[in-house]
Image (cartoon, rainbow, N blue to C red; front, side, top):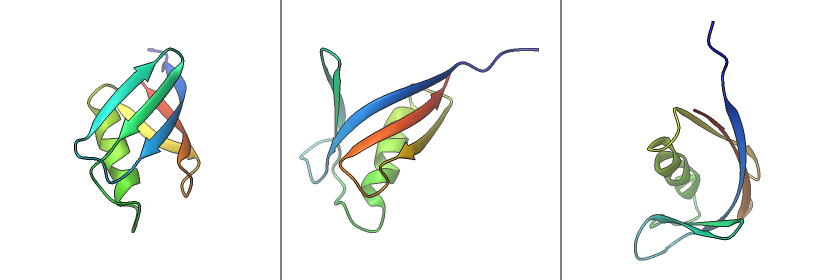
Length: 74
């Protein structure tokens, strides 16, 4: 039986950016997304970006905030 490796990541989201990317600066992680912060579009793009790194990604806290806590499984 394999154990799930769960990780919580605190990020700050910058919507309406020229390109989508994840930037680490020390312990801070900023996620730049092209989508606007309307109709959940920015949240979907954040999940899509982190899904390239992790198997499962969910927004644990901050659905309507620029600061979000992501729950990621490796």
